[in-house]
Length: 302
Image 1 (tube, rainbow, N blue to C red):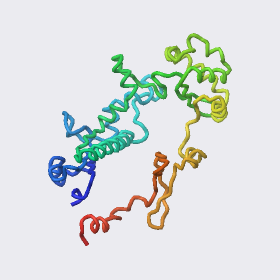
Image 2: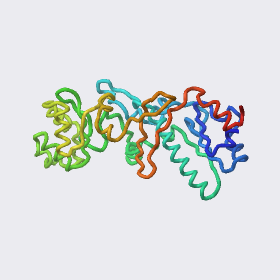
Image 3: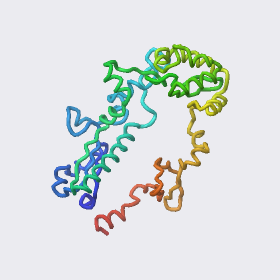
């Protein structure tokens, strides 16, 4: 009955999907040809791994992400590391949203629904982005660079007098500004450092020189100087420091929702739509919190 009322069905492999009720896309399509059916699984609907269970950590490993995340084996603390949140799960959800929107647009034009076959492993491969393209172009598998960037230098985390500082210098003009800030304006014209390609070749030497000079000041001092000079950089914030930022208050990173009489904090949607801003109503229901309304309004019971 729920399927007969639904416009879109999302099947999540982690909870068994609709197969446990004896339903699948072909049978549902026969009943509801306009239905949009999004299947989210670990490995997809076909291929030799189709029946394998999969979770984010496993997918980060099998999908190549952990091979490029973490310090090199020879460095202190070296070894593969997962991303600090279930990133592949989150990205798969975003891809599901994009796929459903595309299917809705197709249905508007044709009246026809379709199945969206979405696999965590496929998503993990797709988001390897420049790292995968580097491999496809050269045949050389990239390794782990810690916080470094394979194609941009300086783009890393460096020690300061009291902590750490990120530099993300994306072009030669920003590098010239950084060199002047560090008291080394000649770096901007040094043949080894003047272009990004040279800086990539001289990555270890340049990073050591930068690290030596950054030890002279605190992270806060350098951050203020970098901002004034237009050089991308800043500290590594803990979550308490992050949510204390004025930027977050202005951008509305935290919203309040209601569960009954109790207000609860929630993370804001990052979409800022000028004509249709996101609305924040009640919180997600407690376990069985919507049971009566679902039975009454959806299933006509009670």
